[in-house]
Structures are given as structure tokens and as C-alpha cells.
Image 1 (cartoon, helix red, strand yellow):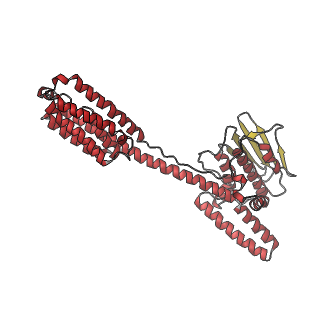
Image 2 (cartoon, rainbow, N blue to C red; image 1 turned 120 degrees about the vertical axis):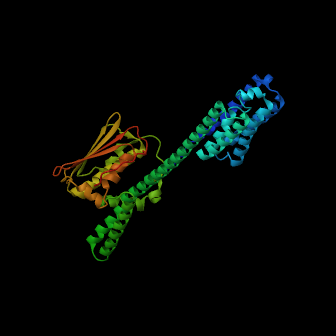
Image 3 (tube, rainbow, N blue to C red; image 1 turned 180 degrees about the horizontal axis):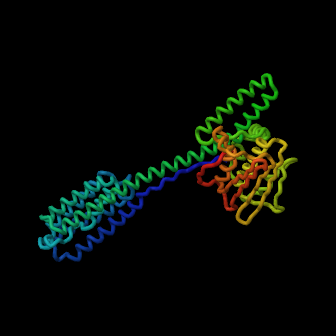
Length: 420
């Protein structure tokens, strides 16, 4: 079944925009309340009232502008900062000189920090430094002299804005890196799936044609030679791109050929559609493997498993039996044992072949043959299971496949598999 990978990008700065929106609303209310509490001390309250009317209306109207980075344009930032600077410089005209010299708050008060933070979130620390510098100059002009409180407030806004801008830049860089990693992982998973399909069908058919052509001789031998060359070329392409694939037995190739030619719709026919509702009985998928030299031992009751997981587990069992035929010969015997545990299903495939010599898996990797890694370990890894291979030279090989019952489909788990 074809899988579609979706890479979801999550904006790490979006919470900052939401926080800035709330900050602007709360600080405009605070500034108006601060003015109302000291109304009697203002020598010219009407300019201040007019300014607060503009400030409140501007804040409410421009809330969509600070909803995200796309809406927060340079023109808006310039206008927003202008509103803050005008409020700072207007304070000396509206308020009493005594309050100004005593360090009283400016008309926009802490609302000004919101304008500076918008620069920081939008453009990073450089934009924040520019905006906070203009605010610092306006505050110094308003006070008339660089008092200790004024310098302290200016430095606080300057440092905080630059720090937040720097954090935003780092967050954006991390977001880009994460998005790229997710894209690469999704592409890798899709390519691995395609490589597995090639391994289970095309390469098997080419291997079968090569062997049959060589056995028949004549023109068929030439056809077999060409099929062998194409198999090597395709195997090299797959192994060079991601993971190599392994040669499988003639019986498996024949099954692949019948599946490709005879099934309605070919590889993309009905079997590649969505999973049927509800679990399936694993025993029904494993029964076709039983034969004169393959003994299947299964529970008397159904062994339910999610459809995709059941198909992948059965395919892994088939790949293990293909390895038995390929490496132990047609005369080898094999046993399949199905165990239904409360939390997992264990399928063991054991043979009486010669076993695997030490270093054989590494040698197979160098030859581009990854039957165990791709068709066995890879399948189990994708459905959240595990595959363990135990082999002693002269005493056969045992492959233990474990699948949790809770598994419902492929997992986003990457791993480095051994090769056979």
C-alpha cells in the first residue's frame, strides 16, 4: 500500500505573535488607567486625551497586523513606532514639568515596549536594536538630561529587545533545520518503501528470468544474460541511493511474476488500497507457506492483527523462507511457530540448514544484498516490531519476529539494519 508522507511545519514564533497581541491590549489599558489616576496633575490634559484616543483606536485596529509575520509589514512597524515616539515627546507638553523631572511615566508608558518587540519578532536583533535606539533617543529628549532612572529604563528596553530578537533568529534557524530534517526523513521513508517494492517484485522476476534462461540455453540464455545485467544495474541503483536489496528464491520470483501479471490493476490494484476495517487473522496469511518441507504450528484460535501489520509480518516470514531456500537449499526443512501473547505476537522461523558463517552479513552488505535488512528487519521496524536472527554454523538459523498488538501501521523510526 502506497504511503503518503506529510511534513508538518510548526511555526516556533507564532506564540510570540500571540503574546505580543495580548501585551499591546493590556498595556494600552494600563496606560489609559495610569493617565486617569493622575488626570488632575496634567497641565494640558486635552492633548493627552486626544493621544490616548488615537492610541486605543490604533491598537485595536492593528491587532491583525501583529497576528503573524506576514501581516506585520515594514510600513506598519514604522507607523507603530511613530505613534510611540510621538507619545513620548508629547508627554512634556501635556504633563507638568515637576512630574517630568521627577521621572513620571510617559503617555504611552510601557506600551512603547510592544512597538519595539514587534521589530524584534519580525526582523531579529538588528531591527530590535534600531527601534530601541530611537526610543532611547526620544526618552532622553523628553527628560532633557540623562538621569539614572532614564538610562536604566533605556538600557533595559534595549537589552531586552535585542535578546528577544536574537532568540527569534535562533528559533527560526532551528525551525528551518527541523523542517529540512523532516523532509529528508519523509523522502527517505518513501524511497525505502519503493526499494522494498522493487526487491519484492522486479528484482525477483529478473533473477528468475536469468536462472531459467541459463538453464534453457540458446536464445533464452541470451535473454537470461540481459536480465542478469539489468538486475545488477537496478540493484546497484537501489543500493547506491539508499539500501541494497537481496536476491530471493525462484519460487518467490514466480509468485511475484504471477502477482504482477495476473492481479487486477497490477501492483496498484485493489491490494494497494486502504486497509479493510478491523483486524485480520494472521493464520490465514501464513497458511499458504506451509508445505511438505515447511511446518506451520499455530494457535487453535484466531490471531488478530491490524491489516497492514499482518501483511508486513507475513511478508517478512516469506522473506525468511526465501532465505532458507536460497542459502540452505530446496532440501532444507523449515518450521514456523506462531505465538499469541497478551501484548504481542511472536512468529519464529527456524530451519535445519548450515547456518550463517561469521562475517557473512557484512560480506552481503558489500555485495549489495540486504534481504534481512530490507524485507525482514525493515518491515518489522516500520510497524513498530523487532526481528532477531540467531544462527550457529552447522545448526541452522532462527529468525524471531515480534509485533506489538497495538501497532496499526508504519512507525517513524529510523534504524540501521544488519544485512544478509
